[in-house]
Length: 152
Picture 1 (tube, helix red, strand yellow):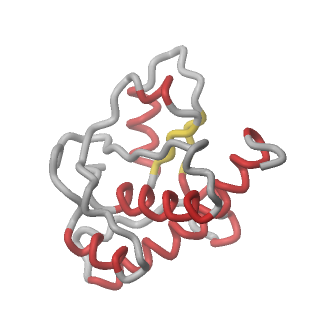
Picture 2 (spheres, helix red, strand yellow):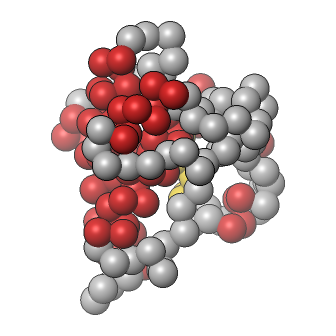
Picture 3 (spheres, one colour):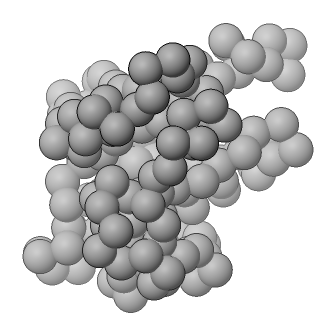
């Protein structure tokens, strides 16, 4: 939504996974919010602390709002919840070719469809978000490898 909690966490987790698989030269990762509440701000300090405990640095990220160009620049645009997915679908240009879906669609075994917003909760919410994001990141990377990077 505001690009300071869930999305930058997902960007950091997925980037770490892509780096571990030495695919950072083939996969571009970015995050953006559907609203402009925090444009230019770093991720929430609690999100940064939770990520840091897992060896992920979110400190260089800055919040931005999704732009029309994103729909042609990226193959996948993933939302953390249904409300943000609806906002993205409404905002998307009619001729876009990217795949819009929920992020947790890539972790169907979890039994969750949405990544909860930890902003108004405690520290444990940020840890839970990272757990969900990790599982979805692994599923997303498997899909990307299958659909776009066969043999890599």
